[in-house]
Length: 115
Image 1 (cartoon, rainbow, N blue to C red):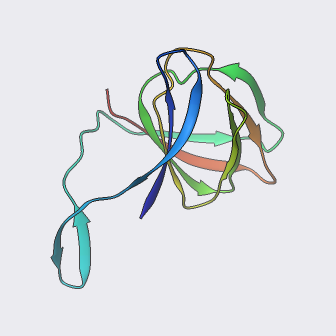
Image 2: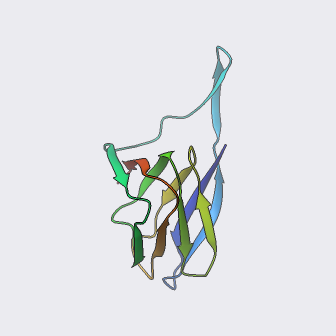
Image 3: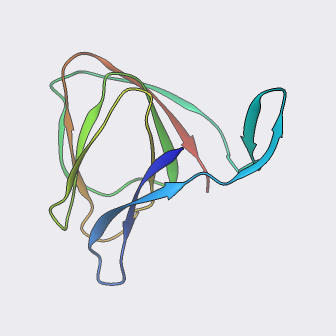
């Protein structure tokens, strides 16, 4: 399972990389990761025409798209569409940040802070 990760380097530039989930156990036909830290859950609805200029993430958090997706552009120029059902770990809490561009339809997502 792949998780998109948006992070900041030591020069303040944001970049994407992929993180693969490490499976810790198998049982009853399922694979499970180890338990990861989280400090809450935030439900969010975003209009499809919502575009946010350069900004940093307010905190380190997972974002899980439940409905629709979003186009994210890192400051290094790479863009990714994070689709419905995909997971993004944002860690660019300082530096140049990223752009967010809504796609078609109302976007529903979960924010899961980890700080």
